[in-house]
Length: 307
Ligand SMILES: Nc1ncnc2c1ncn2[C@@H]1O[C@H](COP(=O)(O)OP(=O)(O)O)[C@@H](O)[C@H]1O
Ligand SMILES: [Mg+2]
Image 1 (spheres, rainbow, N blue to C red):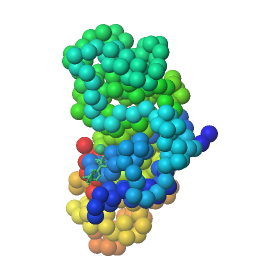
Image 2 (image 1 turned 120 degrees about the vertical axis):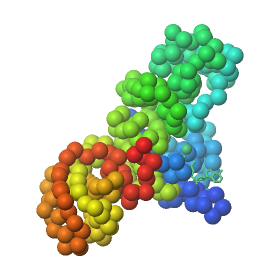
Image 3 (image 1 turned 180 degrees about the horizontal axis):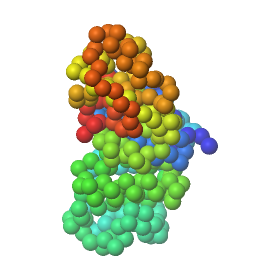
């Protein structure tokens, strides 16, 4: 099956600012794709282009195999979306809000029940939205986005501002959607931990570029371990390893080198560092946190991800 999203060298500038540069995104059908990156990385700009809300400066977009520029209307009918905090009519109930959208789209009442069911808001559906928590409002936004049974669901920062319970509910909802509804999901977040456990694929944006894109499975195979180096000069140590073509990052008072079981031996890293006059006080290999990997890939500049 063709991917839900494929972009070719997608770019967008605002005056001199290159907000998105040469991005080749690929969201496989049935994926939960975590679109990650710190604030200002270019996620929302990319998403607005995917939704046809913002014209690209260059590049092409295909949604479920259709060219967005040539088949706007058909593409629009395939996508459901929620961009940042959704607006609802506060004085109406959740159900009434959905009924308005369903009416506009010419959908039957059954579509409303189905959507409420998916986001587990059915018991609260007759309460006014004014009384909803932020998490419930976000889930109502997702309900609206899935009303028309889209092939692709695009959610921009749906966990932003939610309390831990809200984040947990949203995660469970996103995780269950592809199996339940056959929809592919592209979900952005600046908080890596909100998404990493549920994503089947991840893309990392950094300063307008897609610096990493992979299935979680491949990522976990490729970088199973992190070799941690204790040193008083972690930044210099990271620079030495990067010059040798090795991905590494300085974190706090340590250096972390993502690796597989056998790609890099701790003694080789030790020899390289000592050869450059960097003191090594300790070396240990342990399970790699995804934050460390992303930190390493972005050269330690994506600090917001570790939050
Ligand atoms: N309409 C706009 N006009 C000018 N600059 C913009 C506009 N939208 C976004 N930007 C800039 O583009 C960059 C990427 O922003 P954005 O896509 O919103 O990042 P993210 O969603 O990853 O936080 C930022 O530097 C932002 O200030
Ligand atoms: Mg954004």
